[in-house]
Image 1 (tube, rainbow, N blue to C red):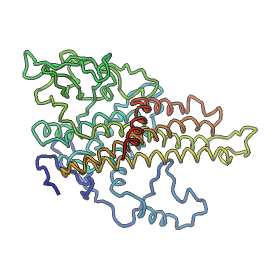
Image 2: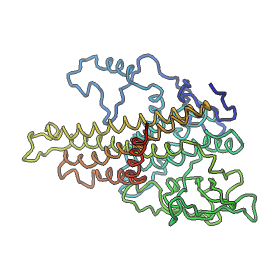
Image 3: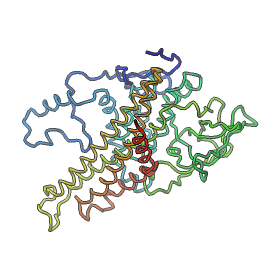
Image 4: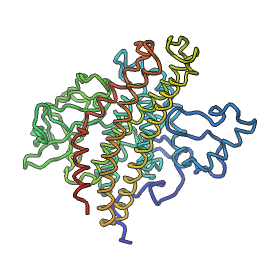
Length: 465
């Protein structure tokens, strides 16, 4: 096996091929772990977790014997991913609180500033940090699955984290130099990162934002206008793509709390209205020397990361559609005269619709997990400096991610439409806000063109030997 690069950030416990315990501190800068959750062993005493509405075996079968709770524990011993569950159980109570007011926030266009801090305080931002910075030992696949759970509660808030976790991936993949140490400390302390990658009114791939040397301070000034600046209205710093005086692309970490940064809440898409994806105007914004990073050094699997983060949010939406469809049908009291049962929740045709929603959620979840598993493999090969394996796995993971984008998108758009077939006209009530699922999913799916991704998959399939 190739010799490990000793300058790289060490892989956190729980990365592929690196079994270990899961730290559960929500440390701030200089903080030490308060507790450790060892990976559960034996028979877990918790419900099995499946895609779609979470129901116990006893609920699924009303004829379950009195000892079904014990049987449930035995089933979990065969089916549960203990490493993931140990992480997820930490955050599920917070996800539940976030979900409670998600519809109200969307209806009133109220950004989830408080809810974001709940997640930061619970240690959500520590998931992928190295263990010596208080990291929780999450695999990248764990992160994507948790983003899907968060998106089931609030897809806007889940998308807000996309640029933040991308910057973490960049730093844990980099050499452990002064810049990396500085930012790992800031991230462990709860600093939140937004993005600024697309220049407004520029051509495809064109970068018009400029970095120049500051005339009166040791550092740089940055000027330009960015759009699709997801997470910027929550951010302490934005990662901004810019050109240096010699024409090289660089990523500048720009503090947002300065007069040269104007964050506008002007995202006008019909979905994901609270993702903070609008305009940020930079006018001679100051950037420290140490916070300008050559773009060429970025982590190699960023394409797979960015698309899978979106796929995770869409997967969460499909799960939310199934959840809301079940709840709405259970609450429905009046049957249409052409229905075959007086009680809607016992109508076999309506139950068929619910079954299809559950199937869509389960299929989306499976696509997400498989593509994320392959990205874990890319990370493991890169950490081992096994370039031959990394190159092969990178190509496979890219195919899997693009295929998942297509399939998860289809599941979302279909589910968001057919859910109304189980509910009748009452399902269109503004109070239920079920239309938000289609709007949010359609907006995310439009982020990268599905038709182009399908063509690329087809080209590679035909060209394969």
